[in-house]
Length: 130
Image (tube, rainbow, N blue to C red; front, side, top):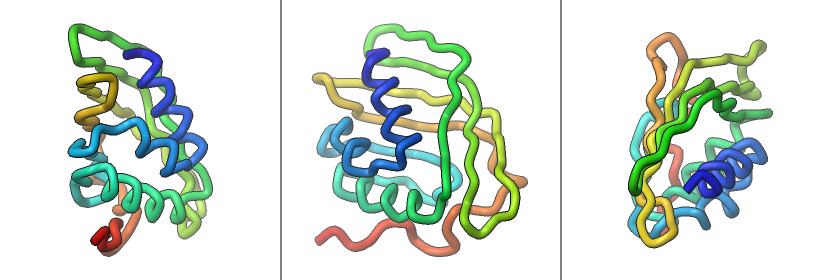
């Protein structure tokens, strides 16, 4: 499970929506408060993150601690991001909860205090996938 978390962190830092979405189960749930909405299903996760990554010069999670038990992994650290529209990067304390089933990420929820930060997108981040 730690290798799935590391693969997620690497793909996120590379802003690679293809590699990132390949880690998820077909009906997975992805939650990142700065996106303003949940992404449901591999196709929506891929489309939403591709849109979000297009808005960012760089973004990465720096993990300082990881604990796993059963199908769950919890990581703590910080999210750093520099969006094209902003002059300065942000660094936000964060926690990631990762649930794995059958070797794929079934749910990934990121918890952070996004209140003082503007959403990455002022509109929907995902395109119609049909």
